[in-house]
Length: 217
Image 1 (tube, rainbow, N blue to C red):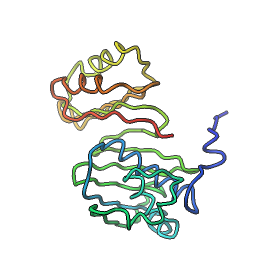
Image 2: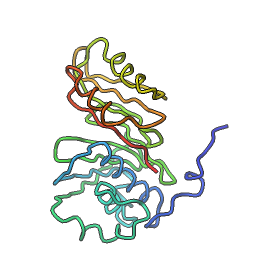
Image 3: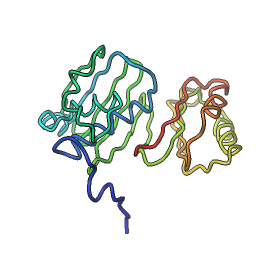
Image 4: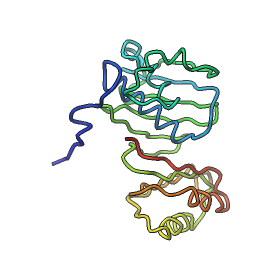
């Protein structure tokens, strides 16, 4: 029998009328912030299906922006987030696409990174693509994410760096555009790695992006 977390059973303490459309939106924004890491000045949100058609009344637009700016689901300032987003250029697009989850969004940050994810219910979320690479990140694990040029030995080099820190790997997944092309790897960890580990991974030849994603509370 599948076990559910207390979070998924009782729903989060939050600002807004809907755990899927409001709390889920905030957590999607928070996860995109955790992945991108850098300051940003421009963001575009593409909302799909139910997010697009009913999200406005539930504050989905505010929740996504608030999360990306670092606000948590129980922060009362979310309702005034448009007044607080000084210096940030933000826009929204609304799309119907039956191939996407009912509560789905693409978050395009500074025209450099696209984070795609779904709000799956009770405030829980899942990131399924980053810059076109398939992932499955739901915020329950600390995660090391890297992008690199596909070549033999990359998995062993990354896992060796992690294991030397005596950190257990919960799961590891790779994706690539083509043999020898661009590739991605995300490693779910029982405890977070330090920035020293991130730097060691960044020093591996042909690695061009690394980020240390802390799990969501």
